[in-house]
Length: 380
Image (cartoon, rainbow, N blue to C red; front, side, top):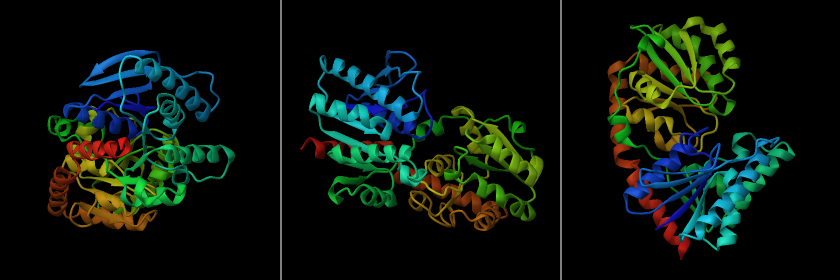
């Protein structure tokens, strides 16, 4: 099967989890004998072949005044490139990822007369609400993608219901397929870390990984920090991610001083080592369709304290692979982090169970097979 992936981010260009999702899914499909082709953004037009995947990058305009305009121009460039490629090879279907891929993917669908699969990774309503014409336009593009698609994939079980109700999508058209983890990448990576960059030898690293935006809940963790330190004074909070870093850094430093460190964006290689050295990760998201951090931590045998919301209802089993907290509740966060820090043997047991569960349920080999099954439905 030869699917055409349309995605606005693909490594090394990445802003969130979509890039890793598309790379892991496409390379696993190639390993299983399929011939995925990716059309994505690049600073200039290039073609490369990596891990069995053919990747075409096209540039977008520098003159766009907002993200919607940028996505529309990129979509036009993607459509042109895909039409050019279709003169030499037959595509079975087009697979769009996220709302920014919708303008290009729907144009390709109609021009090349292909079935379309649309993976919804999050919704405008859930991320930021629909309080302006700009936000309404993004919401409408998401709706258009679900309307035109032959099959819709969502990355979370609860999130499937959100998509159905938000866009009025028929039950039989929506399919839940979780994200996954490339365990080989984690197992082959060293745990060696210049630990002194992040914490003192005796300190227990409590790790946050995510964009510094309200959706991810860093402010709620910061509010919980003094309470945690009252009961676990050896904790050291490491807050990794880009976004409104200076805003949250200022608040946190006022609360706990040098017991918190903001390294900003941390490259993947170092982040894996940091995750292996952390006592736990904390995922205090308010809105999280899936949440890849608990799975990545689990691959490192590191448990996660995460909000009982969205996909983390599935990726964390309370008191078996990690601990749940009430969303947006600093007191709940503090209580569960304290429990794990003050019982290190139990915390290690949670991490071991988390790793076992990832091995059984979140391998890309399984996810790729489920996805190609959805492709077959779309082709019918």
